[in-house]
Length: 435
Figure 1 (spheres, rainbow, N blue to C red):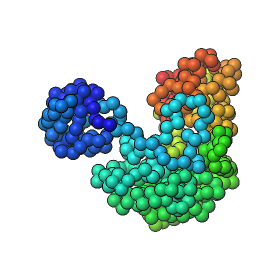
Figure 2 (cartoon, helix red, strand yellow; figure 1 turned 180 degrees about the vertical axis):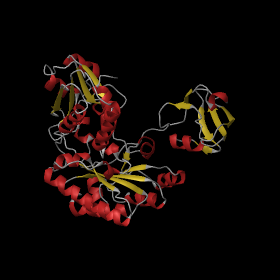
Figure 3 (spheres, rainbow, N blue to C red; figure 1 turned 90 degrees about the vertical axis):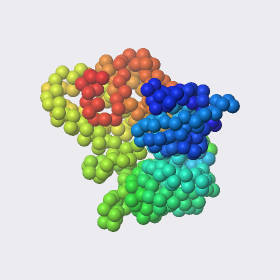
Figure 4 (spheres, rainbow, N blue to C red; figure 1 turned 120 degrees about the vertical axis):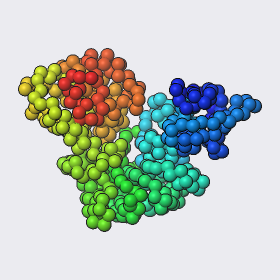
């Protein structure tokens, strides 16, 4: 794909230089522009020689700007290039466990190092060539988010369903040796990469500190749509406790030898284990929130601070909350915290929604669908407003995973529905009836 310019932002360096939509960005300071990494890396400097083409016509525009100032060009796609898809057949892949008939884009599996850097997506590294790795190191593309799962090469190949699974670990070691900042993820599948395999993986990643800065350990998510897939065992209470114990072992060892715990167990593991969530200090800088590590403790800390600032609270209108089964007891506790600051009794109905769409084994709030809420809550909500987590909606959209829209949910339930970001302060504002 060529870097055809689709738009020039107003008052940008590109507009001042007279660059036009429809031209193709060929090179900057003699460096060919292939994708968004080239574009961002080579347009950083203050003085640029920008080579452009339009049909047979070619020209070079010289630009002076502030270092780091955006050039101001838009392209047909965010990446400029096409998105790289995943060539793995992971035994735990959530996309392979989706039911049929959903929107086509939901079935696309990306495995793109550029999106790892720019958007925080996790990559397996199996589709990286030596040239790709060289380029990432040369450009200092960092941080990168790596799905490791295991450092045993043969086991990793089997878990990823890709014969390059083990060999691609060499990219991880090259990135670490080059001093790039890496965050890693381990999806634990009982009988596969737990027990001694998990201990080995955490030891091996500890040896890559400080390049590997944080390691999230999360339980495998299993839906009811697994016909024809590798049989897997869910993480139950005992297995969750065993996993947490191994993570705690590694944390204690790392604190002694590295001065940093490095690895963290996801909130979901504590909920499955029926153990209290760790105190806020467990999570250091909360760098693994996207993996569900520390979301609940941070939320509680934010809510407590917001309540302290709010002083006494009066006259909260009745409301309801819908969330996943795992988070419902936590949300009840958060409402009890707010009640301590309230002059009148808080009338709040909390609905723990059973996940019929994906199956009862999926109990996190972010995967609750609109259809399940309609079937289970219709006619049961007495309040006029319903709060739901923003994570139930697709990123940047107002639809749930089953394509039910937010307005559609409101119409079916007959209540005002407000999606709230996972932030304790914003939650309090929603409780108080403020947008």
